[in-house]
Image (cartoon, rainbow, N blue to C red; front, side):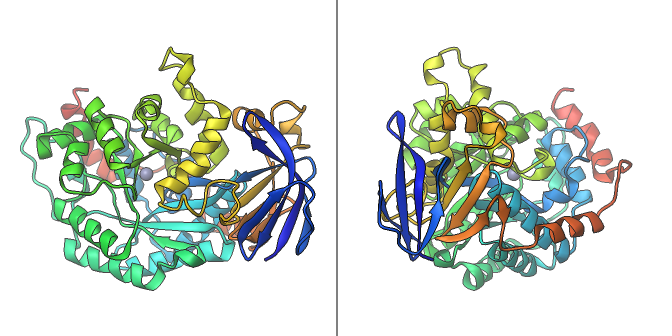
Length: 465
Ligand SMILES: [Zn+2]
C-alpha cells in the first residue's frame, strides 16, 4: 500500500512540473521533486498524473442493450428499455464489471451507478453490483434506482384524462429495502457508498422523496436523482405541482450539498439560483442528451451562477459506451455553439477540475478526493504521454481532453491500491469478462417493444407531434 511515483508530470497554475508523489496507507503524504522512495517505486517518467475522475451518473445494466435501442426520445426509449431489461443477477454482475473497467480505462476511479433493481430481487441486485465493484476495486457509489409510480405516469396528461396502474411495490416497502441496503453495504471507508436515489419527479411521489430525505439525514447519505431531462418532464412538473420541478424539490427539502442531479436540461433562471443556494450539483451527461434528443443543458450558465457541475456517461443504452474522456470532451466543447461569449467556454483544465473535484463535491467527499493534495486519498491516474494519441508533445491536458485518447491510462490507484498497471486492469480477468459478455448475448436486430406501441400515440398527442 506504500509507494512513490517518481518523476511524474503534474499540472500547476498555468504550467506543469515534475514531481515525486509518496503514498502511505492510501493517503498522499508528500508531493515534491526528488523525494526519498518509500515502498514500491513507480516510474512516472513521461506520464501525466491526475486525480481520478468521477463517472457521476450511469446505469450499469444498460450495457446489455447498448447499440440496439431505437432512436426515440426518453419517455418512449425508457418503455423499450424496460421491456427488455435483463432480469438475472449474473448479467447485473457482468455489466457492473464492464462499467467499472471502461470507466477506469477512461480516467475514472469513482462510479455512481444509478442501479436498476430486479423486481423481487432488489437487495440481491444491490449485493451483486457491490460485489462486482469491490472485485474490481473502483470506488463505488451505488444509487439503487427507485420509483413508486408506473411508467405511464411519467408522460404529461395534456388535455386527456389518464389513469395509471398502481406501482407494484409500496412506497414504504421500497424505503425499507433502501434502509436494509444502507445497513448491509454502506461502508464509505472501504470504498462502497449507498445513495438514496429516487429516479425523478416524473415517477416518484413526495412521500418517496421525503422518505429518501429522512434516510439521507439519518445515515448521512448522498442524494441522487434525474432532473428535468426532457421537455415532457418540464410540462409534467407544471401539471403535477403547478411550479417547476426545482422549486418543488426545494419546497420538500430534497436539495442540499449532498444532492447531485443528472441532466438538468430544462431549468429556468430561478431554478438555477435555487441550485446555487442549496449547493446542489449538476451532473452533465452530454452524450445521452444528444442521443435521446433531450437538449443541451445550459452548463455555462450553471458555471457562471456558481453551481457545481461534473460529468457522467449515463447508462450505456443512451450513450452507447462508458468512455468518460469522451463525455468530458463533448461536455466541454458542446457549449461553444450555444454561447457566443468564448470567455466562458470550458477550457481543458477547467474540464479536468469539473471531472475530478466537481465529482468529489457532488458526492460530499471534496475533503478526501478530487485533487492532488497532501492528506487526500490516493485515487490517482497516470496517463502515458508516449501513446500515439497523446503525441506529439504539446499541452498534455489539452490533448487528453480535446483529442481522442485511446489506451492512455497506464496506471490507476483507488485508496492507494493499484488496480490498473501497464494499461491493464489487474484485479479481474478482463479477457474472461469479454468472453462472458459474448456468451450471454447474441447478435440482435429485430425486436418490438409492446409498451412503446401502447403509449406512443398519447406521447405524440401531448407533445404536439
Ligand atoms: Zn440516467
